[in-house]
Length: 318
Image (cartoon, one colour):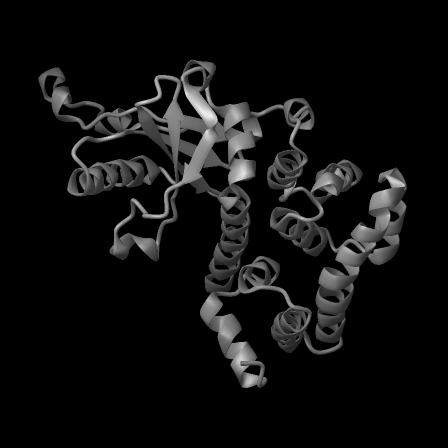
């Protein structure tokens, strides 16, 4: 049971790292908001002014448990700015409405401390888990109390996107290839057969963005998750414009052929338990040897930064 729980949490860790890196790119975040913010909100925004807010709205005590992404954007009124706060979940967590209430309170308190007026914070919840989620808002936790007490409930509204409720045809029509590819992966990561059906479309959507860091994360996640071989990639590349095929092959060779596949093969040659452990160590070492950064190694292995540093130190890589 303990091992099952740890494996489940490790998978959540991989997916959460992936989504955070994906949406940390301002261009991708802007494309996401253009597609998925309600029209009654976007009509007031100048999304070209979207900029990340470096100061977290989460207290130091919460940073080790929760992650938030915050942007500031100007409105068409010019003098008014608002903040977009996005929380993402790869699993259903009913406590999230209380967590986001804490984010809002912390954010407004920090604004009051640092400036004379406050900016509106719009909370957004993006859920990319396996099953559809009927999210309960905060007032629903207080059923049965006398009506005259309900005015004491700290109610607020939020924008909720459940990826499993977004039709795949809508995702396939998205204009931004990185957003489309990432959402197709997130939607079907628990269903490898369904995900494989979209591989050619995903890879084809990535070719205009081969120089962006988000592409590397998507590609590493996709190949690691589905164990795509080099030969399969060559077949997929038949749908990619000829001018991009060499870049895609180089990306595969750099990230996968030297790193993941060799690490996995070494691990499989040993016993099951030791093989799994050795596999992870080999993946870390090979990925580091090929110049991958710490966050990408986390995406590949699901290991914590501390564990990765320990492995590198034990093998004289630090």
